[in-house]
Image 1 (cartoon, rainbow, N blue to C red):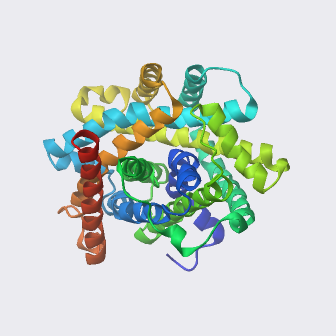
Image 2: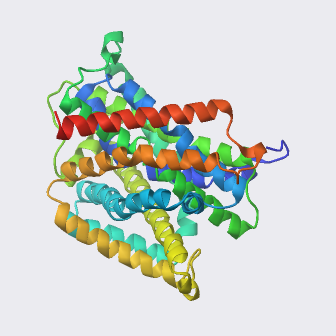
Length: 421
């Protein structure tokens, strides 16, 4: 990056990466990382670190591919052939309907637990989804993108304050970092954590969509240095926040015998209680409001990314839809927003028996499909369309291949213990 850039220029560069961090804070952080600390103490620290490091190349390839080619990763999946596109389509079918519901459900739980809204999970989650859809249709997302930078910063500061306070309550004995005995329940929980830690693998595809969309608005693609700075800020912010939530769970709930509530509202009250017990009662509305705002921005970013998935795929399979617009905000975009919100509400009504069980189901499916998406992203960056100057280094290629192998082994082990053993 040029040394002549001012701080304000750098802030303008940081966009998709912070959106990524906002989208990542949710199921993996508020729910699963906190649960990991509360149930296992510090013994899953290595799992969280490992999951974040293993996924790094595949997710970053979304940034690298967009900058190198000016296209999003879906274009690469199409070019890779029918099998690659089929893998992505299967992933999209689940991701488009289930992941927004899971994130909206956590947001609804926060609204119930903090604001005391007395509505069912189904009704309140539907309200969250459809209100987000209205915001996207009305084109107010640009304002929310700017606000997200502030919200993530405030949220991060509050969490760090809580962690500093709770550090003294954590047992830092070296033996507490040893992995727990591996049995089916523990393996199941490890798979749950890795599914959304620090985010689903489709995040790389969404980031490539945001980068190309922003480039169309500004007329300029970021340089590799600018894009990687943006991505690394977002990725490692989400990584540090994951460890912070685990420490909060370990410091406040581990060893107390208290289990997380199965309801969304009860879970949200427990999360907020962690902060009020560490920072003080005065923080209830501050951390509560910041949590709701960041989670709601996560609903917006994920919903927007999924709409763009469907929009590009429909434009590829049905070129006659061009009159409705197949790029950016358009009639087709608005129609897809409404359809996804309706479909997500239907999914929730059929599958929502338990808040925790539903979140775990989504996390498992995301984890199992992760190596397949990682393979597609790896192939995208090794294709002939990538200029020599933009190709990943030998270290990054090796890192990516190791990640694919590790994620595949974890998925196969889970499937074996779940359906065979």
